[in-house]
Image 1 (cartoon, rainbow, N blue to C red):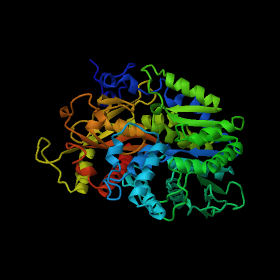
Image 2 (cartoon, helix red, strand yellow):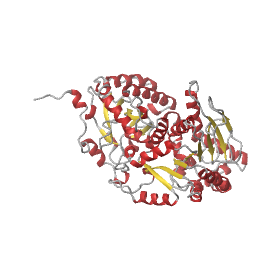
Image 3 (tube, rainbow, N blue to C red):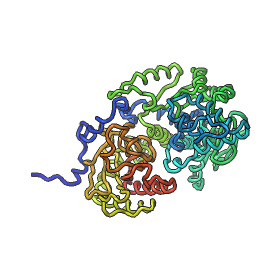
Image 4 (cartoon, helix red, strand yellow):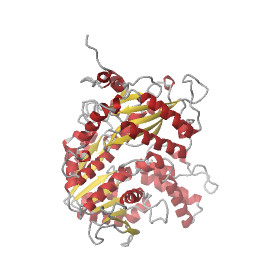
Length: 561
């Protein structure tokens, strides 16, 4: 009998139907949570057409950025941001006022309505002083926008949007960014990118012009480097429609938060939006649910002006999505968007929105694919190219489990833990480190495979446990992959009551996506035997940040091809 080599076993592709492990996982996901498209998002003709359309646009481009653009940095939707600003406890000035815990326990209330209650509460707490109310709002909003999670979760969407604007500028194309967000994460990403390339003497760097809607004068301007300052494309313009609460420096008032401030600024905001849509042949709406009333009014008023694309996520809209991918909710939203002359583009996951912006940037930088430049290839070609190279070289390394074990011994001291030599001991918190890989990317099954683990003697390879890529997955590495950012997860949040959590040895997870060739190709997951509330790895933000940085570096070394 002919023997099968170990390499052949490790690299044996899954059968044409879904592997048994993934079939079991799929059976634990409710149909109403199953939100993947039948056609992979980056293989969809519409996705390819959108990438080409944006990359080829030479006229001024408008990027409208809603709360979803920086949610992977702030951790807050608009509604969650408002909730977070309520007092933690009752105030002597307003003892009957609501607390944050009271608000979070309520059913969903329209954000602007909830904001009116927030302003009333804070005004009472501040004893009626307008200046004190402004100071209180500033402190609370700033605390929520720049919390500790933002320092290590590191979402990519805001960075990728800035990179798109930058590469357009280098090609002589003007870009304006409208944002309803208060935070300055877009500015921060610009400064990071500028700092990384400003010493490259052969590369020009566009400047930055930050504007509000209540003044023709910019909040501030950064001059371009090695570019004609008078050229229309020499500056990236960022316009704050609802006010600006920077991480440092003064606030740009008014902050459009509640119903009164919405009404007071409706004319100015509406005029800015209408002017923007009328003067840009192409507008791309990102991070918005198409619910903001000033946006809808401006879209309605400019239905015959230019082309508008809206990038949305299915999980936010397809509440009735079936296992076959059908959804009346999506059909109705497409019809509504058509009436507003908007073309909706539905990504399956939030992480795909950031990747889409990256694909637009790469196509702008490389109008045609080149054999000698992998970054000029399409997303699926880059992902498959990486897989073929890695899986035939580094992916076959039988020492991968040992490397993960050694890495675990290095990361535990960050949490003041001594590596436990007895994996069965119950005397202390126990950890394991797993490497999950985006294996066989061009097969119909879209999944992650646990390729190796620190407590295993052998390399699992393609035989390892697998999980379909879905937002409802109970697997932390899959959640981090589809969200496109590092995340900390408790088993109760992952399982959501589907099965008993007592069956799990690991109960808390720190999952970090790893990139190669500008694609997420795997996830490193640090798993603890404790629940998230008592796990050392998430007890202090500074040590969590160090652990994430360590895992990023490790993952890039392990998955480099």
